[in-house]
Length: 471
Image (cartoon, rainbow, N blue to C red):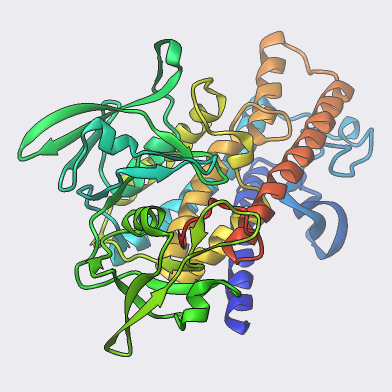
C-alpha cells in the first residue's frame, strides 16, 4: 500500500511539474518582454496557498485543470483569472510580437523539457517490443458485444512468423506504433457493407504482401483489434497477477506469481491462445500447468459462468512477457514519434471513419493513473510517458481554441489583421464560455477515466468474460 501511495505521489508530482514547466515558459517570456505578471498559478479558481515575490503571487489554486500566468496586458483572461475589469486599461499596451512570443513559450518549454527527457532515454535506452514479427494469430476473437467472431487477421491471411511491414502505406517501426495505427486508423469503408478496412503490408519469406484486414471493436473501450500478438520471450511465460474472489482459479489453488505454462498439455504461446482455448473448451475441466518456486504443478480448473455473464472464466488476470529489446531512439526521432502519435489521435478524433471518440481520451484522473502505472513498471517508462505528455501538452495548447495558448495567438492575430484591438468584453465572454466547455469536457472524460481505473484495480467487472492480461 505504501509503495502504491508513493507511485501515485510521484505521478502527481510529474504532472504538476509539467504544468509548472509550461507556465514557467510564459512567465520568463513575459518578464523578458517587460510585461507585468501578477499571478503564477498551478490550477484555476480560488487560491489555496502560495507566496508573493517581486510583485507576483505564486499560488496553488483549487481546480487542477492546468495553470496560468496572469498577464493583465493580454486582457482576454481577466475575469477567469480574477483580474479587475479595468486593470488592462491602466497599463501600457503591448505589441503583437509580445503577445505571440509569450503565448508560444509555454509550448516551447514543454518541448525543451521533453527533449531533455528524450536525451536521457537516448542514453540509457528503453525496453520495448521492437520486433513486428507475428507470434500468434487468433482464429477467433471476442468483440465488444461479447460475440465470438472470426479473427480479422486470420481471415485476411496473416500467419505466425509474418513481419508487419506497413499499415495503410506507412512503415511500421515497432509494435507500439502498429497497435496505435490500428486503433486510430481511419482507412476507408468498404462499399455498402460499411466495414472498417486497413491495408496491412507483411513480409513472408522475403516477399512483401499487401493484405486487406477488417478490424473488429473489442473491450469496453470499443477499440479496433485484428487478433494478432507479437513474439513471446521463449524463456518466460505469462504470470498470474491477480485472482478474482469466488472464482474457480483461486478455489483450485492458483496463486499470484504462478507462471502459466500449459493448458491440457499445450504450451501457452500468447494471451490470445489462452482466451481462445478457454472459449473452445470452457465447458469442462482444464488441466492448467504452472511453475511455482521452480517446480511444475498441474491444477485441474473447471471454468465457471459468473452471475450476470454469458461465458465461463477461470477468474484471474495475468501479465504476458513479450520479446523485448533495448532501443536508443535519438531525441529528435523520439519527439517526432510523440508528435506523430498526437497527430494520429487528433485526426482520428475528428474523422467520420474513425472509432476513436472523446470518451477514449484521458483527463487528469486518467493521466495520473497512466503515470502511476508507468512508475510501477519502472522509472525509465515513467520518463518516457512524461516526455510524451509534454509533447502532447505543447501541441494541444497551440490549437486555436479560446482558453488555450493558441486561442490567445488567434485573438492577437485577428486584432493585427483588422488593425484594432478586439473588444475586451467579447474576448472575456468567449474565453469564459470555452472555460466552461473545458470543465465539462474534463468532467466527461474523467467519468470514463474512473471506469478504467476501477477495471484496472479490479473494482469494476464489466469487461468481456474472458481471462484478461494486465495493461
